[in-house]
Image 1: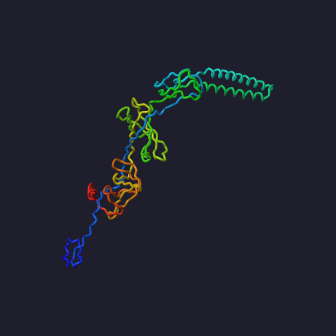
Image 2: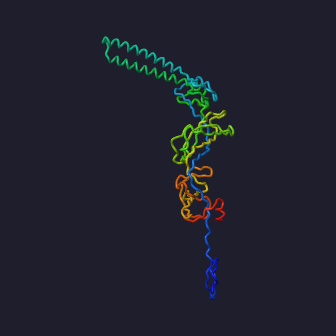
Image 3: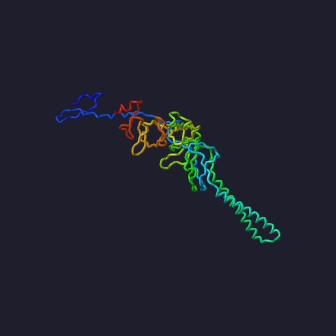
Length: 351
């Protein structure tokens, strides 16, 4: 006979081969799966990002000649400062001046012919066709004079703005064919840098927003800048947009081509965030475990966005206030019943 059943007995009595009874082994109860939880919350946060770039002069002009000729003078060399209207290049214009003198004389003769024929027409001594031809010749002569005056103006090239000569590619005495790159003029007081940022950051930026610029060649000091341009398109492959940051004012020693680091900060915007540890990834994509009724967890596909220190933005898949698992993922499966615990106890309980 099997003995009396105890309150703590976990086995049943069964007869063995000799007719004796023995206890069945007790069924083992599955241990509770411990997890730590956090709540998805909408918070107003600022996003800070550092990007790298190179300085360049916003006003940067390559100077070309529109008329060919021998170079008579180039007063400025690399590094020289020039003012708006200063002569940069003077070409030999003697041939054009001679052509202009000829065109002026032709114009004067055409004016005399028209006046003479108009007098004869009033007396009906000449046909109207003759006056029409003379009038046409006068218009052509005037156009020729204007053309040569314009061409003559191209023989002297002046600075379009105040700046410095960055490059000089020809010397006095050389013959410059049409459209030759003669020199390069930059404005060192208009330094900017361009770089790409994520499409997720762009909505939080606007023209005029402040930025901090650190130029490696000038040490660890940061200099004030501002966003001067946000380009209207986003690269469809990288999902990156281009922005331009202007140094204001330009610090002493800053030059085009120098390496710089720019720190941006977006305005405070609402973001639905969870702890970084809650977001999981596998070959099917990003997901979190959401706590449901009866302490059952459900795998939920989400799309993440920006990272804010130890928080990650959730763009889709979660609602404000839902609880997600942050620790205790070892052996955790979809639809499993879990036991929420305080922070620091989940991994120890599941070991």
